[in-house]
Length: 93
Image (tube, rainbow, N blue to C red; front, top):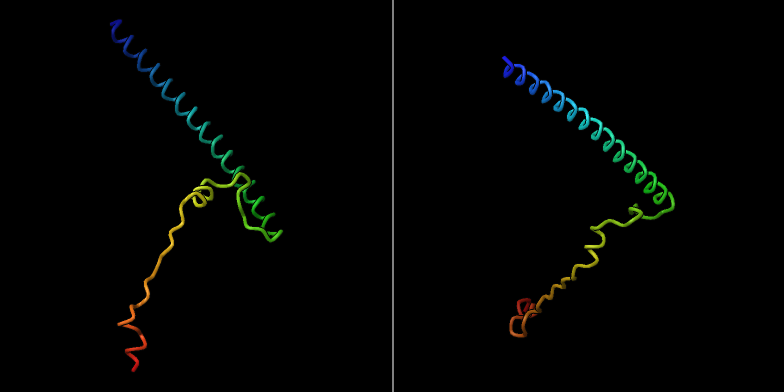
């Protein structure tokens, strides 16, 4: 009979821990959502003020994609001109 009580007690403790984890997760999610929303609002205001000044809407710290784009090597495409024997002007005459 004490084994049944222990099992019931363990099940209740597990339910309490599970409920506590769900509550903690909900609180963390709410906090994270508010932080992201506030950051998005600040970024929007920053971009709006830059747009009013006629500037491009960049982030205050500069995005990592902007830095990566400037670090990548430039590729220059070289096109060959037609050779003397197959000139474009030869076909016209």
